[in-house]
Length: 391
Image 1 (cartoon, helix red, strand yellow):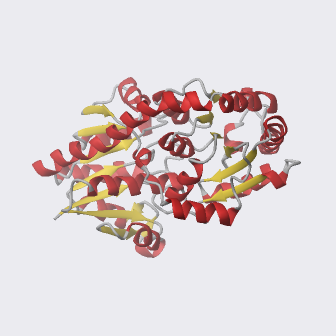
Image 2 (image 1 turned 180 degrees about the vertical axis):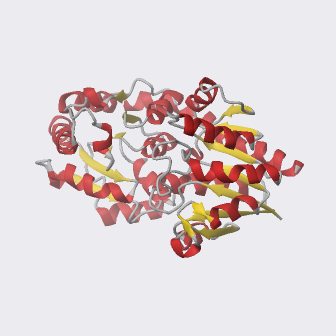
């Protein structure tokens, strides 16, 4: 048996992170049955419950495991007692570089030379990198790249970032996000959730929304604080209900976002026409199934946009992360974004209404592009297998 350590945000709180790990394991299972996966995590129970049907070994990263989250013995052991390390998601950035509760780059860079010494390859697996804004971050990223024979990214921006920083690097392959291959639950299970939550009863349809608890972090100019943002989203929901006679569904993909979502709903006059579902109650597969039923969706969390693209629902990005706009460009939806400086009830309502009117054409145009992206995400398994078998 081979052993692969998978590094990512695997605590169970974020549906997008769960989808990355779940689909990675599913994709490998299609081609390999000889790999055990070590998963450093804040919740060993979550890993066992959600992914125990795969050969996984959760590695606890709580204080009683002799660590400060990713800084300590569990991470060192997971990275140096394995055949290969995969870096997933977007965990390599230099924001709050010295805080191990936020930053992974410092710890991974600290242990990467030990991997190199033991000939343990570190592979970037359908991941993103950045932002890297400081020299200390650039130097740390170089240490990780020094131990890497291959970088597989999910976006062209990561390739450009590494090249623009003039870092020494191996081959860079641009593939796609693992979450695109999310498999839907059975129709019966989706129908059970719809009945339980009383969703999709309006023949005119439903428009999806998603928000993020970090709103104040992106409003540093003070032009759009959390209160104003919630009023814009609440007003947009009202305008869409009144203009199109549709219902609204907020999808919460990160548990911490539920509070701000409720604040947005509280700003609407037509709250009886608005529903909220989240990953505190449902799996990433179930949320994706529900997103397949909405007509169009606008969100801040990138993975709600990825889930929508995966099931043919036209996604619109409220641009909180560069990776969101980048992903929409990848699937041919690059024009369907709105920046914070342009965010208003009028502008967001107009964009969503236009997408709603054009939804069938948008879905049809997106479909072949998304299918190719799904294939690219799965092709990463072959590239990794070739390296693993050569060790």
